[in-house]
Length: 443
Ligand code: GLU
Image 1: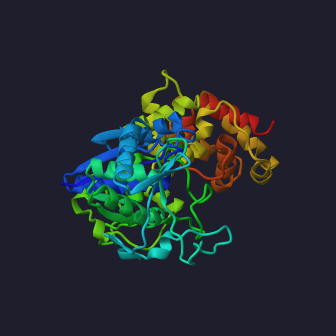
Image 2: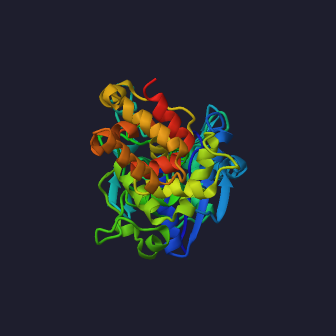
Image 3: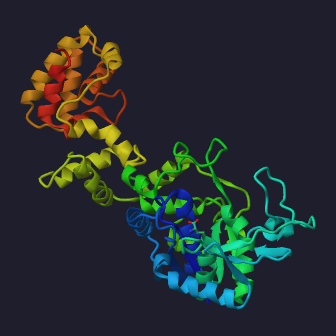
């Protein structure tokens, strides 16, 4: 029976790296009909915060990963202490200055990692070092090994110790976590051995790097999952993107939902090489998911965001909103982009960039703008077909070319020089805003 866990420390928000670790654990559990445990490692009472706990639980749930069991390490301090006492009694640990240490002997440690194969750590790994980096030697000139802290002087247990006690008691079969934890693994093996527990299997996931080749930073994508949510990404798209960071479904397939992924997921197929986080790729995937959705679903996804910005309210016409989405479908990859492109529809007044004004709203267009405003004000049916017919007629009458007027009109109505069909845009914008903006263009 497979049992795995995602064990975040609530000392910060859930980031892309953590979400990827959670997802690989979850996919592995689901693919094996196993159990997925969420364990909040809140032993650092000072740095752990309730708001981070809430955000982590929220984000994991939003990404569609349901957990079978939930634990908080802060509620298990007596269990860790009892285990430390046991080691003290057995003579395998000792007390010093209020802290409890595990005695570390000279030895080599081998771990077998499902992704990276065998990893060996020799005794030098446990050697104590001076501030200048030189090994500490005893009176006989022998290297001194660094004993491992189990319980700190303030009574709080260390990460490594809690992790081992819990992974053993909770009967984890495989530990899937980030590569940055490889260095902890030999210490944890020693603790398993001292406690008489059998170590689980390990699988250390490759690092995720920024596109610039450096560590994932805020600029290169290390943003909280909740931020991506606010930016208007779909959880399905984020899951799909995360699963590609270190794993591939094969056959060059990139769009794959979780249900299909868990049917073919295999830890052994995870890459050793670092994965690169590519925001453009994530956006591309989000666009693919948005394209597959019908306008009704996109509308219900967008509504809360639009409401929050005061762009729509309860009285907003649902059909109108769906029409806007239909017109812009395929033209936006996130909610932010949708708003960037459509803000002019919802806003009362728009601000037109002066460079666009200079380029497009030249005086030779003044007359046609005036004529268009007049005609549109009284046009019987304000639909794209009628709007276009009037437009073409007047443009010809003024001795202009339609192509020379389309861009200036678009700029005056939308504040942008690109967008979908001009007359569909006018229809959606409505008579009042269209006429007002045409008039205001030359004021
Ligand atoms: N609490 C650790 C972290 O957030 C978990 C490490 C582990 O999975 O063992 O990095």
